[in-house]
Length: 145
Image 1 (cartoon, rainbow, N blue to C red):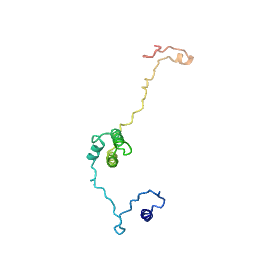
Image 2 (cartoon, rainbow, N blue to C red):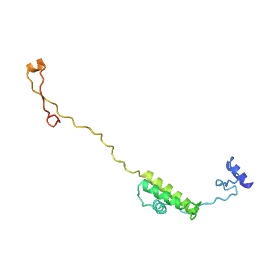
Image 3 (cartoon, rainbow, N blue to C red):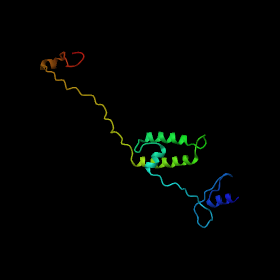
């Protein structure tokens, strides 16, 4: 019942019966707050923990994280809950570093523009122009010429 009272005092009203409450640090409440003994992760140590090289692209880091987290799953044989938590914390550090240094994007591709053939200049006489005479024009490089 003391656990339920602590949860209610912390503002957790809709909690299941087996809920484990971690109350906020209040020096006057009498609760002891368990602090993690693991030091803060650096980017280099986070990369080592996940199993990826520093500066690896996001896709490689994500693949390495997924493999590491799958191997550490505490619900499977050989899994370890503490290592699982460490890998998740390391992934947060790696993601923060990747967000600070996004991968360069290639410049957008220029659209293809077909070459415009030079204008065709045909020399005809005024009489041919007035009578609408037909003339044959062979354009260099055309399939008809």
